[in-house]
Image 1 (cartoon, rainbow, N blue to C red):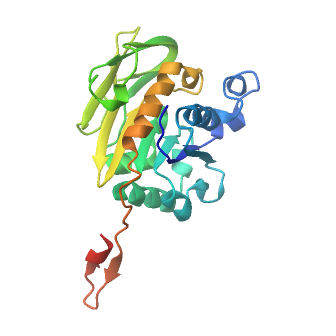
Image 2: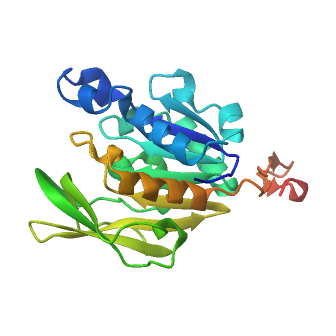
Image 3: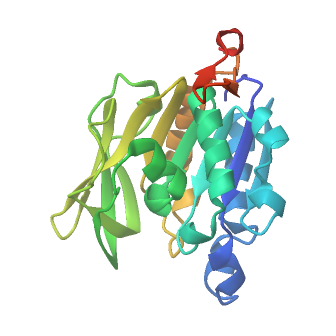
Length: 253
């Protein structure tokens, strides 16, 4: 367990939960993917305030005030990337650059916030045959890999494969292999501004991957690593001068 007092916000678009039949996703995740993730993180972070938000919430549950009190934002999206407000994306982007940690999950690789931060398409190859995934640790010295089995064996999972159109990551921590022979950079980190980002791919909505103890451990490690609760979250103020130039107030940095 981690003793850190954090504000952790788990965001999930919540569309699959609303559309799936009671016998499938509702059985695996009766409180939604966000509920399963939040429940796991509460066990790892007993001193933290772990809350959830979805696309249907006002401002998608990502108001300025709420983000200001969030040390780490976890993001799961799939079917409704385009429905996320550009205004909210800009808001989240500012907070990440100012030091808020971001953990992007599975199909969140195509989320507006992830592609905006990385500046690439973040596309990949995929197929969904429910194959076994092996998640291999290739940087065991990284804190995100602490206490994690090598490999993590996930009995059934959607295949994500290369080429994964992302910039060169700061850290390549995990590489996954699949029964069809494909490989994928399944655990990578980036830094943008003052913020830390961790992307982890295992976690499709059709399989109970977020109940896997080793996956839960990786995500807890990831949250702990991207969090910077002691760092001041300064948001630069942009001012307009008489000559039409935009300048940043140095006192706000």
